[in-house]
Image (cartoon, rainbow, N blue to C red; front, side, top):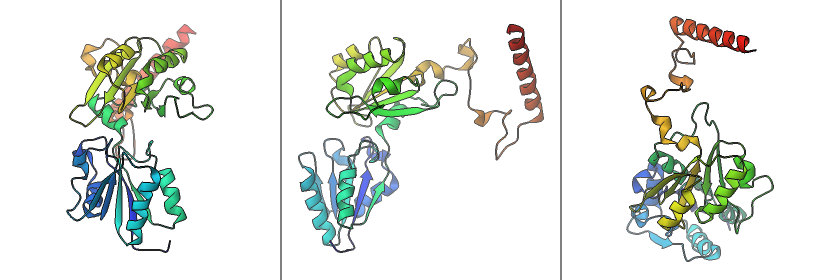
Length: 289
């Protein structure tokens, strides 16, 4: 296909709430001549921003050849196509096979990032997934099922790191997930949350532990469109005020008066306090040794 003025945009439609669209995503949908959206995962309200003259297609019953036939025809006519995906296109967006076709046809395209359901779920849970001294890493994965995982990416192997774990497309395998997490060393009391259709009117959040989460999910009859987050980062107790907790908690260095960074120097008094504290800790360690 020769170069034309047509262009394809892979647009991150976010988790469901139209207000979580980026400004750029909204503009692209408004300006596009053709809008193709995953209507099983993206609510109609997200594409309601399309202009009156735009052709709007739901893709849930389409196979890839049908989607690309509409796309290639529109681009050959110099039109702009918005391919609206759920969440963020880069995470289980199934856009690679579409990009390969566009590359083979020398068609211009661009990816517009969106809010992933993982981060929308964390927001609903009021959780910071990177808690100092608890978890400074996040692993995003899926449980093995009809889609096999590459060697070394089995859930049990990834879970052995003990960091915050976000599991997509796997809610029907909760019993298997719990079994593998326990085999990887997670305790039965490990906090876990399942967020169903975050950003939709029927949004539902289930909290539990590895002991009871499978039964809770089964009772709620959740079988799709849910993200699972595992680890102490989703434990509501980490948000308790310091006065309500007996143990000392680590906090980010960002706001610490003892921490110097590009825009702020540590105060002399706080530096001295930090040194005294370090000496005290060192003295205790040497006595123990």
